[in-house]
Image (cartoon, rainbow, N blue to C red; front, top):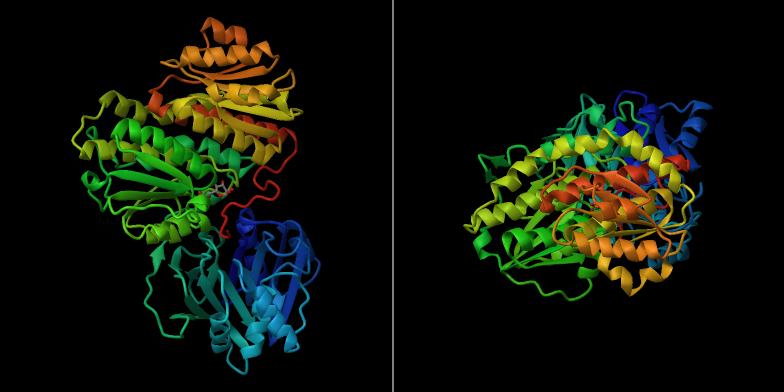
Amino acid sequence: MCGIIGYIGKKQVAPILIAGLRRLEYRGYDSAGICVLENNNLETIKKRGHIAELEQELNSREVLGTIGIAHTRWATHGEPNETNAHPHYDCTGNISIIHNGIIENFQSLKKLLESEGHKFVSETDSEVLAHLIEKFYSSDIESAVIKALKQVEGTFGLAVLCKNEEKIIVARRGSPLIIGVGEDEVFVASDASAILEYTKKVIYLKDNELAILSRDNYEIKNLDGVVSDFEIQEIKWSLDEIEKVGFKHFMLKEIFEQPRSIENTLRGRINGGKIKLSLNFNPKSINRIIITACGTSWHSALIGKYLIEKIAKIPVEVDYASEFRYRDPIIRSDDLFVVISQSGETADTLAALRQATVCETLGIVNVVGSTISREVKSGIYLHAGPEIGVASTKAFTCQVTAIILLALYIRQELGMDIDQRLVEEFIAIPEKIKIILDKSEKIKELSYNFTDAKNFLYLGRGVNFPVALEGALKLKEISYIHAEGYPAAEMKHGPIALIDENMFVVFIVNKGEIFEKVVSNMQEVKARGGKIICITDCPEEEMIKKLSSFIITVPETHEELSPLINVIPLQLMSYFVADAKGINVDKPRNLAKSVTVE
Ligand code: G6P
């Protein structure tokens, strides 16, 4: 969602804010703005569009000052324009705020404030915070913020400047905020990538905490103003990991990083054929597993259902987090509740997790220190490194890797043998992915056939059905081509009506028990004129050659591991189609990397 960066120290703040916004742009990018405090004066510049527009504006005027806040917006209330962009002022122009999250009672607060004479200029829910703080301000901004936040329902990651005080007040409920601790300088940001260039020492602000940042000091309190304990943690990511290092887009870089990121997920977790995970529950006491997630992470969850049931023999239920939280779900004390989230901040996933109070919980999360990672009882970090491209790629394959580890671990702890050929194949996956990546130029050429396509179907069976869903999601989110994923056999119950010579159909076909069945589905498509793109480990099969218009060969592997291989050409194909269409794949329209609102 929206991104926040703030700085107080001795350096000129505008370049720091712009650099931070650039790194946060992937979170939301319909407008952006900064506010700088200098000599008891607040100067604000806002622009609709990408950060580049704001930067251009800043190049044309001098904005001096060493204290400032900045925001990149992903609209929730009010269209993307300069007025609705943050920062927002109060009526006097003395107070400036930036806000992530949603103020749920903003309409009643706005009505009340308007009746007291406050004048609103934007359509946003956030502006209410500036006026509410103004209402309580006499001479101390900290206590005004505390009083204002007591009136607020909803979520906030908030940073506040007041022209009379050389400090930044920040507060958090539901939207992530971290404090970066430097030498004679302090930062605030919605995620670490914005400040990594300057410091690796961070404090993760907790819900209902407030921090007062001054040039050489910071204090953390709760929302009643009582000083809280905190811990300074060290970020492990390097700057290189958040740069494009020669790739045209982050998405492409992240696709190519997968051999290494999967190795990182595996590192230290397989030893002498045994699976090592430090989890705080005994698998013998688990009778059912519930997995909730959103988006791509939900596709990993669905793969988890197939694999955990097959490998560990425990029943698994999978739910969209947004549905789970509102449907009176039954959770029992002998359940294991698993949440999967790249960011560890997705609002619906977090809310679902908070319902699982009676059972063991496990997070499969990438971002270290994120809210979900702190609230689960056990965790498996992906160690995939920062994922910046909005369309998730390496997080997906690392999530699937973590799920396979979990399934094998549970099997082992339940006293069942682990198939060592599977383990060997598992360790070989990064090398096999490299074989596909080495063929990326061929996949690129093939992708140029699809730039004018209007519709795609993605079909797969078994553990590759969720891969079909993920392939379709990748294509639609970055190339804006309509795409649907289906279990191959379900095609006959509806999608077959859509098939004609304009329909491209991607089949995921591996050797194995259901090979013949999938080939029959291919025949049904071919008979209706559909054009088949086949992702397969058996391109030599007569029927594959006969029925396919395009074939992408992938290395053979164990069926359980095949999603890790089959998804790679689908990611590459989506990327190359979108890039050929001239779309900025790292910033597809209307999407946000981390959805921290409902
Ligand atoms: C957004 C992103 C997706 C992601 C989903 C869940 O929709 O664009 O790429 O899969 O959120 O995010 P999470 O961080 O919980 O995995």
